Length: 188
Image (cartoon, rainbow, N blue to C red):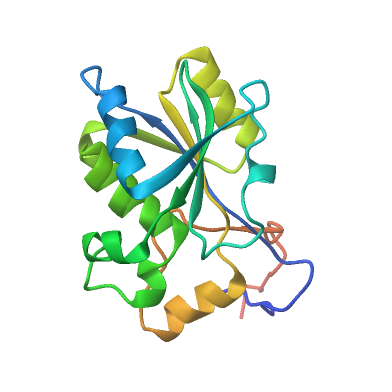
């Protein structure tokens, strides 16, 4: 079944499924921060407010930004220093449109290369609610909450036009179609 709507519809909302990550107990958080600072400007933000969404640029794309809430350290905004320094780390079999998505940068550069932990060795949970992600870190049930910006409808179209598919859990369209909205008699 397919559900179609105009990507220009002002009521179409694309939410980003943020990442709530738990690393193995042996994970070196100090080393991770040191490596991050080589490729990103790491800016600490008001540790009393888990509302990182307001600190990120409104639209995905350049400058590349990722919000991060870290257990026992507070909030940070990561801004990529140079696309050229990390471009080769992102799957070259993918289209440039796919490679330049914030979510691709998070998985291919931050988690895979800089954290150096395979996705099989970490637990990743997805949420569209920033408060849920921050609560998991504050309670100690997760190590880092990564807040990403939603891709725009134009970015999604660019990925599709390049013959690629969006990364796993990179979009959450709202509103969702109502259950039973389309019905057909099966008696024919």
